[in-house]
Structure formats: C-alpha cells, structure tokens
Length: 302
Image 1 (tube, one colour):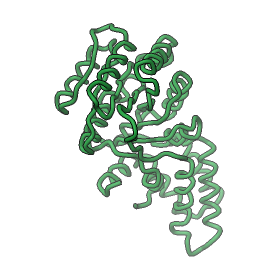
Image 2 (image 1 turned 90 degrees about the vertical axis):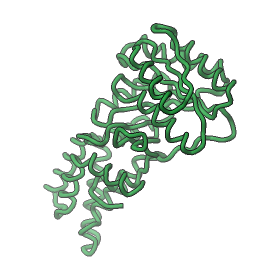
Image 3 (image 1 turned 45 degrees about the vertical axis):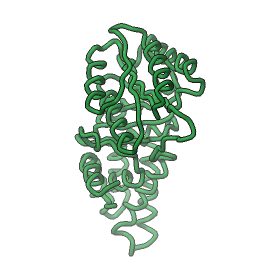
Image 4 (image 1 turned 135 degrees about the horizontal axis):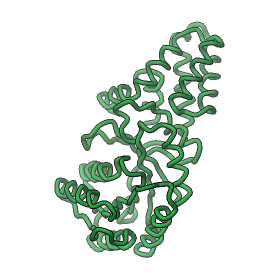
C-alpha cells in the first residue's frame, strides 16, 4: 500500500490501534495480557484470534529483553497476518473473458459505489467492463449505477423497476460476451439479508448467470461495512451459505471502525479479503494488503 493509503488505514483503525499499541508497549504481565485480550475482542477479532495474539505477545516479551520494545507488537501483528489466510490482492484472469463478478451485501454496505470504484480501478489498468443493475427493487440503486456508469464512460444493462433480477443478470452477461468486454459486475439487491426470499433470488441469479455463461459467475464478493463489527460476521455466514462467497470487500474503514470483524470472518468461513476501502474517492478502494492491515492494528509502521 502506498504511504498515504497506509496512514489513512491507520487512522481508520485508530479506535482499536491506539489502545492495542499502548497495551503492547507495557510489560506483558497477566493484567496487561487480559486487558489486551478484552480490547481485541471489543475490536471484533473474536476470542480465538485474541487468545493467539496475546499468547504470542507474552512469549515475545519473555523471550528477549532486547526486543521488548517492539517484539510483542511484531508478534501480535504476525498472528493477525496469519489469521487472514489467503487474503490479498486479486488479479483479473486473462485467459477468459468476460469475468463475471457478483457483488452481494445488505443495503447501505456500499455495493453500488464499490462496483463503480472497481470499474474505475480496472479501467486505469486498461480493462473495459460492463455493469449489470440487478437491484431492480430500489429505483435509486439503478439510477445511482447509471450515474456512475456515465461518469466512467461504461455501459450499464438494467431493467424496469420490479423486473426479474435474474433476467437482468442474464442480459448483462450476454451483452458483456457479445461486446467483448473484459469483465461484468452484477450489482445485486441487498434488502433484508435474513429473509429467505432474497437469498433464493440470489441463488436464482447464480443459476441463470451460469446458463448465460457456463463457468460464470467467476467471483461472488460480499461487500461489508467495516463499521458494523460483529454484525458483519452474521451477514457473511448467511450470504456464504446461500451462494458460496469467494471474496470480501470491506468498506468504510475511514471512520469509527473497530476493524477486527474481517479477521473473524476469514477465520470463520475461510473467504479471503480482496479489497479494502478507506474513503469516498475511487482511488480509496485498494487491493488488500494483510501485512499493512495487521501492522496498522497494532500501531506499527510500514
């Protein structure tokens, strides 16, 4: 991550990072260890990750007095980085086109804006895309996507209000194939993620997209609001069970985010983080760097 982006990530995680860094700078006795564990759990990292990070920090403190200033923080960062598994940058395949990506998530997580940011990111890399406005139940969603598409000079395929989302997805994939674009992003509905009818609708989108292009959708990414904390884990479980997620995009890590939920999600369902957002501008969506994230959480520099 570029230096400026790293600093914004640290600022976004400051709610957790400042407290964790202060605790790691203290002698790692039983009281400090328990306070560190509580802080990590409050930061939504989950008890397993918290216990491992505390154990590593205590071991580092005891092992080498010369390393005590940074050793516990480095050890805790290593635990967080390992817990993130295969999370990291995603590279668009070049052996087949179009690559079809479904964006999922509850309303308000930032799916539509994220879709536009992905188009902008890949457009700067010389790739051409198409947007599918599959959230036909919110007129504002289609209008917002169309506005972004106009700004980005990108084609968008939509449908009338109340149209079958799967039909729109089918048309978008067929259009992407016919027009020879590199990728198609399907912006799906996100209302009431706990309701069975929405989840069945998303399953139908997957089935219909597969009919339009046999090996699609290639990616199913959940967009989660980084400020929601543990609620994001429950959302991830529901969507993963419904469609089988392949990646996560974490937005809004530029405010009061506690920042640990993404680690808990990766550990719980094994889905890697691919992108992270720390602001409103298109360039504020960046490929996820798990080392930079882990070091930001414990207050370390790049």
